[in-house]
Image 1 (cartoon, rainbow, N blue to C red):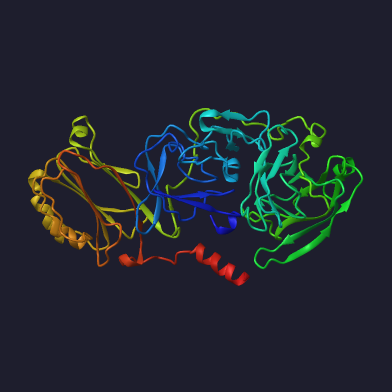
Image 2: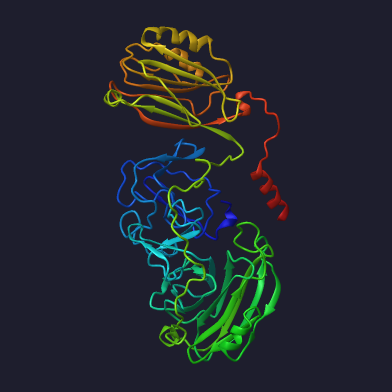
Length: 541
């Protein structure tokens, strides 16, 4: 996720990591964030796995774990037993009051239906009526609602209105408004960012005098997407309303247009594409259409021409509270309807769904080799569990007591196994000589033991393969080692041991391949998309 993909990313630092608060994001590109694995799951954390789109996680059976604690290189999915696909939180120690603006506007797009069972559906918090229609499906245990529709955001910025609370209501559900306290609440320009269903009508109200200057930005609107808004003002207010494109890189405005007043709401509704507004002084509502004129590039939140915005300058001497809810409804109430039919629930397993890779990295130009070690305890082995080394999904199992050694070429993608050796308990003494002389350079070394090996005399042999210093390997339970043969000592080389009769469980590592530090000779230059984008941005400035 590039910084341009969201308006504000607010993070909270807890005892066990960092939690992102994002108003809207696409998770095909995820930024570098360190999150440690929690030691004990709670009812609050069982379903909140990927912390995205405001404290929620569309991940089934996964928890995020960083492979490196001191320097984050790779984000992986560490699977564990969970009972919720999604959880939008509830008041408590993990979610505080769960009443921040981001909590209320949490939403994500289940494109393939792999999370909810409804393809092309959106999932939001169950009490959010800005995104609902009558066919939406409530999922109470997730604290969520699953809906079909098209959605965007309106970014409302006001000036010189400290501590002002904004209430937004949809004309179809006026009994369920959303109250937003805004960010930068004590600054001179508070900001409010509700997620809305497109092609619907909304009214906006305040808990104090209406702002004299307000900006409405069209966020994630595609060309011709629209909503109608009615903003509450005192009945004696006069207006100057302008439209323009704001250029984010230098703050300049272009293609400015003035809105003109019309005499009725019916006239306004006949001309939704024109720059018109209607002020209903009997209710205090200033009506206008927010309709996007330009296309977006990819998933940019603004159009290719700039950020489309409407500026409202209001002139009034009234200091009354501008809340028009009592006059607006039921006058402007509309019967709820679904503009996009709710999809049928998928039957059976979702074919080809979900993410295609399980590693998110700050270096996407690198290739990674997923490696897993399953190291059962003595009791688990007696029940039939076998030690396994898995390389890129290929399992290598050994059924007898001894040592399994796998040698992988560090310069081949996806991977090339160059040697597989099994040393029985009687042959363990030969392992030390093989480690010293039998491993070719630029090789990844994967070693796992099974059974009681009283004297594993290989500590000195592991030092050239990445071990910092000789380790005590006598009378241990299981041993797992990841090493590298070459003139470079990677950070991923590790040694794991367990007490006697105990196992190591599941160990997982993503090993980078084809690094220059390994001495690999690449056939061609790797395309660095991140550097290309950086150069493009530098030229634009």
